[in-house]
Each structure stands twice: as C-alpha cells, then as structure tokens.
Length: 386
Ligand code: FES
Ligand SMILES: [Fe+2]
Image (tube, rainbow, N blue to C red; front, side, top):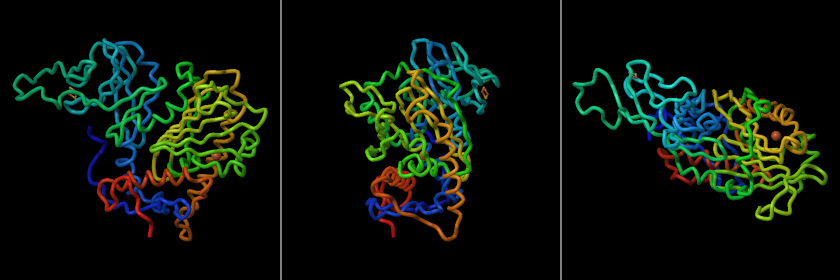
C-alpha cells in the first residue's frame, strides 16, 4: 500500500536514545525545531501507524459512503469509508483513478461511486465498473484503475486506518482490548457537547510527552491532584502503547470493576491509555474522552477532544471532571517548553526513572520509526547516545 508523499526525504536521522532510562538523555532540541525532521516524521511515523478516522455512526447501514480525511493538516490523505450492499465495510482511496478528482464530498447513500468529472464509476468494493471514451485503451481496465484499499480496523464504534502499517492493528490495541475487555464499549454514546478543538503553539510531541508523565500533576494541576492518589500512580508500557493507571483517593469517583477485570479490587479513577504516536483514550467512570493530536507545523498542533458517555450521572465527578481546566494548564506548560527549546543554552534533559518511563518509551519508538529504513540503526534498536 503506498504511503502519502513517499519519496526521498533529504535528512539523515541520527538521534538516539539510550535504552537505559537511568542514564538516558531526552531528544535534542533539533528534533522539535527542524522542518526536515517534521517532514520525515510525517512519512516514517504517521504514514506507518494507525490513525483514527472518526466514529462509524454514519456508515452503519449497507450502501453508505462517508469521506474521511486522514490526519488533516499533516497526512491529508483523502479516504472513503464504504459499506457495500452485503454489509462489508472497507476503507478506500477517495481519489479517482483517472485524473485524480475527489470522488465523494459528503456522507451519503449510494449503489455506486460515480466521479463527477468524467463519469468513471466504481462499485462499493472499489472496482472500476464503467468509463466512457476508453474503448480503444489497451489493457484497460487494469489493477491500477480500481480504487486502492487501505488497511482498516473498527474498534469500539471507531474507525482506524493505516497507509503503510509497521505492524497489525492488534499490535497497537491488544493490550487495551484485553485489560478493558469487561467494558461495554457499545454503550458509549457520542456527546457533541463535550467535543473541543484546541490549537497549541507547540510541537505535537511536546503535547504527547506532557500527557505521558504524571510527574507534573501535583505542580501543574492542583485540583486534579486532590482526587488522584499520586503515591500509587503507575505506568505500564506495551510495545506500541502505554497505560497510566490512576487510582482514586478515598471517597472520590472510581470504576465499579467486575471480578473479571485484572484491576478488580482497586479503586481506579482513570485509565489514561496512549497509542503510538498521537492517540489518547482516557477512560473514566462516566465514559471515554478521546484525544487526537494533529501536527500542523513544527510549532503548531491541533488537539481534538471527543466525548463518549455511558454514565451521564457521573460526568461531574472524579478525575474526568474539569477536563477544560486541566487542558489549559497543560497547554500553557507545553507552549512555554516550545519557547524554551529555542534557547542556545538548552539541548537535552534527563528522565525521571520513576515517572518518565512513558516519555522515554515514546522517544525510543520515535527513534525506531525515524531511523528505519535508511540509517545505520537497525529497526527496533536505538543505539546508545554519544
Ligand atoms: S477524474 Fe474521475 S473520471 Fe476523470
Ligand atoms: Fe497534565
């Protein structure tokens, strides 16, 4: 499957992170400031991971079409969700294979896909079925005249696709699925009143790093600190994901966990689940706050919050209340870091071995993806920094 704008990117990625968190140094400032690294990240990280395409409410019935832009402002890949008459849901390219016109402009019901430019037609599986004026064309239609199909997965009513996946969907999501197998995902209902879009004047990775550590919670979020038991806050690293397990202080809102849950017996206030590179799934007793981090420029990021509620009576309590205030406190911090990184007197820092393992894990993954395939580091390895 072709990745977006693939081609030689004129930068050699030679950053490295020591695998030992107790002596490693963080990514150098150049990672965040260099536009060439930003472009390389688009191709090697974002085009090779699973990107959220939104929920699947408008493609529930056979014969539905819904265009989706993959990571607008960065990958900008025009895709099309199509559920055929037999009920099979596919993710196709939304670009006509003739001269590149965009095919479907908005969600609709249809028996076929017809290009408005010269009337090429496709069935809902993406096969080209009709094209006027091509009677004398040789070897037509060929495989490249059908719409490319993009690897796609549906989970918890949400759609995900990857242009050139580095690993299958399950490698990114299996930990979450297994630990939260008891959770009735079908009961989650989108609540547009909880949706927010923020623009942050900072590199996208700074926003992610801030999310991945609880070290700052007592200092930056005094109200949140009141409801979490920071003594027992814990980090669980997976291959392409990580979980921060936040326990509630006595008397504050917690999940009613069934005996089948591995966390049964604990008072869990929130599961903060991150999936590499830019998706956060925050599960609270009231439901799910999904956060998508979207790079716009090396120093500009859009963060979209989408709320899915299952227990409306719990939305005002515990760690999942007052999300807007926590967001503002986080934004102010990462924007200040962005300004600090321009300093000639700062390049790299160190990690807290007890609280910043998640950040270290994220940096190691970035290093792994950016290094492959064209540098001296083998995939999966980041050599010790010099
Ligand atoms: S661009 Fe679609 S038919 Fe010509
Ligand atoms: Fe925070």
